[in-house]
Image 1 (tube, rainbow, N blue to C red):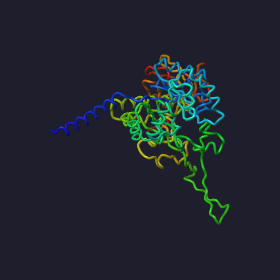
Image 2: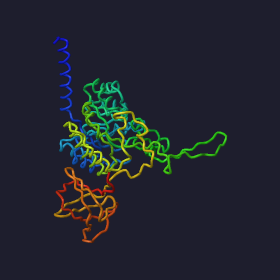
Image 3: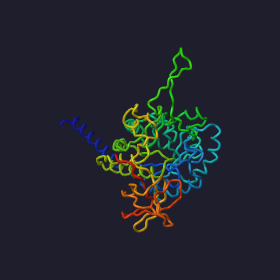
Image 4: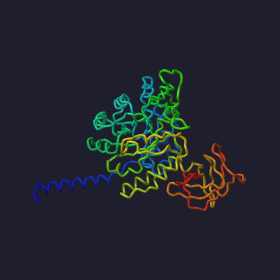
Amino acid sequence: MGSKRKKHLIKINNKMKNENNSYNNKKPELLMPAGSLEKLRYAFAYGADAVYAGAPQFSLRARENAFSEKDLEEGVSYAHKLGKKFYLTTNIIPHNRKIKPFLNKLDDMLQTGPDALIVADIGLVDLIKEKHPEVDLHLSVQANAMNWAAVNAWKKMGVSRIILSREVSIDEAKEIGEKVSGIELELFVHGAVCVAHSGRCLLSNFFNYRDANDGCCTNACRWKYKTYLEEAKRPGEYMEVEEDDNGSYIMNARDLMGVQHLDKIIKAGIDSIKIEGRNKSIYYLALTTKTYRMALDDAFAQKKFNQQYISELNKVHNRGYTAGFLVDRADQSSIRYEEGLTNLYTQEFSAVILKQEEGRLLITPRNKLCVGDDIEIITPTASYTTKVNSLVDVENNNLDAIHGGTEVKAWMPFDGGDVSPYALLSKIIKTE
């Protein structure tokens, strides 16, 4: 064999060896949302490697953020005791009036001990690095980093991780990683998306003077719009244009789902996969964490994709799913033109399980639950399907149903296996 040919084969073999080593040695971090201390605990119980939570006043969920400064300290401590990570989201794009308050609170936020700050604004990046050069900064998706040149520029500014724009495909992310070494890359893989450039939207500000980029989004893209045509010579005569009797939901994006593409994400060398949903329920958090935990572990072990994972994700409220820009260009199929609140999910979060005694469970409702309902009991390690055969309150009164929004507690019979802490109960409303 000629020496050139031999060298060429050696190069190919070495390349394949390096690719295999990269694939086998680097499992992406599973990063989950934590809108409260309760949600943080559920995320870790169901398999998260890390969580992200918003700093009061300085994240894009400012209106709904349940974290206080005391909670942040407790949350960081809880994560670190488990050997997990906690990232503090400070991703507003501030007006002048918010810069001074941010700097006044910066030392207090860092004192809680987060593993990194998530920041979107170039000015805040500069100010933080000037005052605290040692702090790890993760660049928010709001900064819209879409190419290797931008990633390289942010790296020079001292950013340690880039949360890539939602418009970036897996192939593009892989190319960025190949061109820019020494910086971590993160991709959103699941959750709600906006018809806007990585969520940087002006609709809310335009309609309601509430700036989405300052943490006050009104979700105007989800509203029902009426569209009219007016003929030039017939002023004031309007003809309504609509998809159907529900009206036109022209900007109602389907939810992102990338669970079936985790093998490609691993091969692309991505460091962290992120799921959206700080405002969503503990049920959403538990099911998505558990599903992506299992799917990620399977993909890393190079197992065939299990279609059951899609069925699991259909058990939570959703607007229909799309892979977005992860593998192809998003098109009309990425928008749900029908009314946004149609019944797409197969199960409904119905109760939290408070305690298990021999032969029964003590539950408290989150939605209506009736005697006779088919249910699933979900735990971090198992699940059980059964039926509600009876409900008895703590004063031993028989009940036909319990209702969300009340603080009632009721016993129901259960002869299945061990129900661990953080167990939840969902009602089966339809099968796929």
